[in-house]
Length: 154
Image (cartoon, rainbow, N blue to C red; front, side):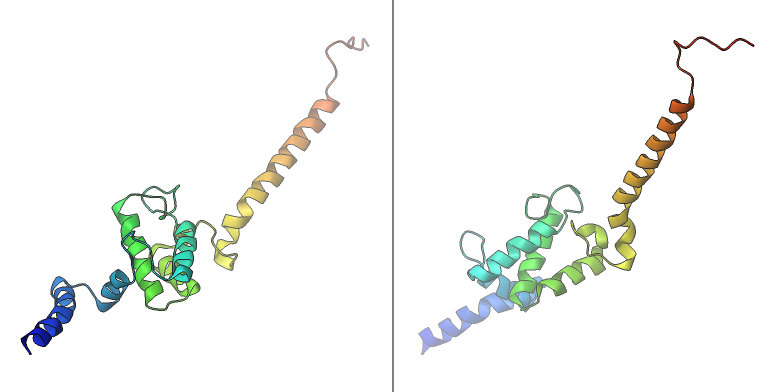
């Protein structure tokens, strides 16, 4: 009887600790779904986790994904992605959450939408502008007299 009570208390202690520390049940479930190496036990979820974390930019490093960054914020974002995956959220829901919270900058490849047209179109606009400038400079130089031509005397 005492052993059964201790087992019941033993099972309730992690939940009590989670509530006491202010950690939600999703974090507790995410912690339970992680193996000793820090990877999700479900291989499909682990593959999704790796894909999502490679697509999200570290807001501190700015040139690294949260999967590659060792910054504390990146660690927090990885934990949050892990919790959302364990909770059953879709990849799009996770990307939408991160984009709503941190802006389009958090994504390495923002989707082509009306508000991101400038991001996607800027390289092509700059390439076109550079081509126009080169064309105009070359056209003006072709109209200039060459230095080795004698000047026309009137």
